[in-house]
Amino acid sequence: MAGSDVDAVVIGAGHNGLVAANVLADAGWRVLVAEAAEEPGGAVRSAEITAPGYLSDLCSAFYPLAAASPALLDLGLERYGLRWRHAPAVLAHVFPDGRHVSLSRDLDTTAASVATFAPEDADAWRAEFAYWQRVRDDVLDAILRPFPPVRAGARLLRTLGAGEVLRLARMLTLPARTLGRERFAGDGARVLLAGNALHTDLGPDNAGSGVFGWLLTMLGQEVGFPVPEGGAGKITEALVRRLSERDGRVDCGRPVTEVLVAGGQAVGVRDASGVAVRARRAVLADVPAPLLYRDLVGEANLPARLVADLARFHWDDGTVKVDWALSGPIPWTASPVGAAGTVHLGADLDGLSGVATDLACGRVPRAPFLLLGQMTTADPSRSPAGTEAVWAYTHVPRGESWPEARLRRRADRIEQVIEAQAPGFRDRIVGRAIAGPAELQAHNPSLVEGAINAGTSAIHQQLVFRPVPGLGRADTPVDRLFLAGASAHPGGGVHGAAGANAARAALARNGALGGGYRALIQTLHRSLY
Image 1 (cartoon, rainbow, N blue to C red):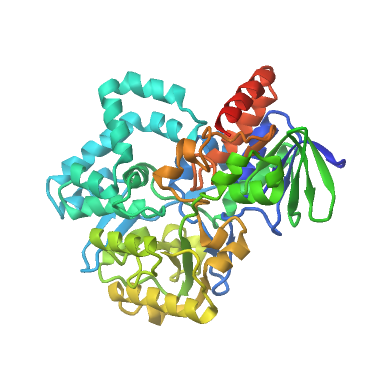
Image 2: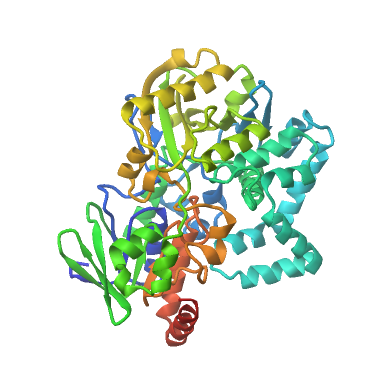
């Protein structure tokens, strides 16, 4: 690695880039990861930002997808220091009127909670989870493995039969509100689906939002919403440690300014110091597609039709996040909420629709919906004994200006929402840190204007429409250049699938049948662009 030639350069040391690098290193490739920031991890990092001794996850915090993703499970990160911790309860949704519903890894506990809203929902929840267990492996493979999911689809067809596969496909298109009404009688189970759908930028009435709520609630029921012991950065540390054992290298503070293209192929990169690194086999980019294509590749090296499609790329909403150091646990009026790692509050089902409508219309919601994390409850190492490290975030429209004074007012409004369900919350604050869209992007340039999913999760930008109409794969129109970030299929979330899929595509391009693979991909791209 002392020279300037490697088998592959990975642009960006976010979790997807590190997963891609590990998969290639496992195949014997010499890999260089070039990261613009001074430390690796992207949105999977931790630091003390509120008060000494209080560890905050700077972006992502709970990891149901990571705990179930084949891409990460295949790497065996537990052998490299990763340890998962769980809060006593997975999630609680607090209604504005003070009622709450809880999700637990214990099936009977969740069933009892949803039954307080409608007795028949206890059996309905058990039936839904039984269905999940029947299709789980094939559904996860279909979502997270390279597109198209031929093998997973065939297995689902054998398991369910043609009629039930069609019904499953229909379910995947439903709004969360519709799915909840079809499956459950009470507001408790319904709001669990809808609230989890809002981990994306989709409201409960958007087509396709139901599958996101269903996926997260079923994963929560099965594997929980685990956190890494010692902070989100432990995932990054494990990935870097594993890569280092395979002679991979991560260069931080080394921004890439150009992908070098010759004869229609990616042949290397140039960094901000002007140093060129040759990539003998592939360049993989863990950056948002618009940044890769426009800033690093250049429109002159791309088909005109793809450039035109990029003008219609849709980002997800902006984000405002607040971290707190508390002198004690949050004093919830509904005391069972204190056992949950993740808490949703500020809206019932109709309120969630109102928030989504405000955002769609470019309005800052007057009553914000909050996703809140009680991190010390999930992992006692995050703050001193008897205290609590907490964060909450809420979405805001893109294109808004968020000067410091306005951010403080929004943080105060967030605290009011919490205080309404936990009187005395503010009295326990010993430290606070606020990040708006600009601060999140400064921390990680891939979080463009605070967009945490690298593009909308709406159905018009999924599968073969992600990031633009195409193949739904990591392959780009530039030979040997692969999109490895969250704006590629299957999208946002810490699951590593985009990185693993890009690495597999690079291996296929350079394998024994690489010439045929190249010809097929180029033929398909010519027909599209």
